[in-house]
Image (cartoon, rainbow, N blue to C red; front, top):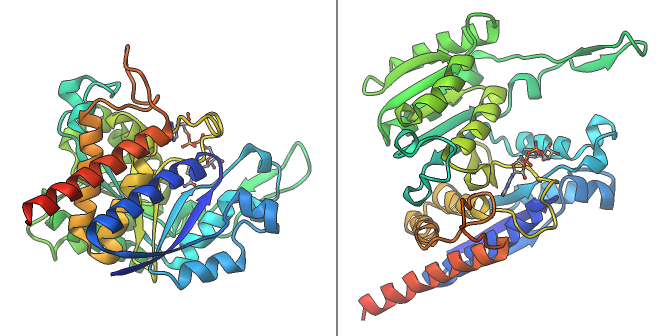
Length: 367
Ligand code: NAD
């Protein structure tokens, strides 16, 4: 198969982890006989520096004419004082909207080898397997009006949270459909005790659930869900929630399973799927070669599964990550006690090696 992809490394550790993810993609393509056509483009701070636009037109065009997009991360403190439309994050929000990617899937799985990397007790975190389904194109991040206005000392800032019924219904259906293939539980997270958006959310989700009699639906307020997530992470299956709540809860889920650097994501539902690790550009560790590339690498697995239906290739990457962790390789964010951390590139190399080994094994078996 020809896999035509746009690669957007972005800023900070985004570029570092994407480099490893592309090496893994190349290894799996070779092992399974696929042809890659990769085009690298600028986004975020790198694009502002080069073209004074966090999402240049040629980046959008390349993304829209490819079959999937792999992104690193955007953001840098260097742009903190720039106007909103010139900030790196504005480029990513625009890209999501241009692609129409309204469903953000964020799995948080506790790898057996990492039960001791979680700040939680092993018996609490063991077996955690959560899929956060986050609405990605609505809520506070996109709502209008938005502004900061007025005289210095008495300025007023406004953001708007808005949701319409069709936007809630389409994301709810994604969550229910995915739950049917999992443990058939959907927890819808809202703040219906104080927010009108959440009251509508709860009503529409409940209505949709009638079409999925095999799925058990429950509701929780976001504050209570945040507490339960650290108390009983193993109880969660599919978590359905709006844009900002999903953003916050998924970082928390990253902490629960050992590191934010492990989490992958897929943003689907639009013309072209967008795949990226959940973490940001991590300016505190950028340039040091210590970032965990596994979230980016696992995003490649999601890309192959969701945009190309290449389930075996995706599983090959996931198995290689599992094997690498079982062998004891840890980046600094995962290392505990006297475990010696490996670099970003060494971690990527180990995953590539595991893929090459599994390919050689399969070739021997077929002789
Ligand atoms: P962050 O996710 O970049 O970092 C949070 C913490 O997690 C930091 O201590 C960082 O060192 C650590 N971390 C993150 N990824 C890691 C990895 N792969 N390996 C090891 N440690 C890792 O969040 P932040 O510090 O709040 O934001 C930094 C910048 O990234 C900001 O400009 C923010 O807007 C941007 N951001 C971008 C995205 C995105 O591109 N999707 C997401 C979140 C934040």
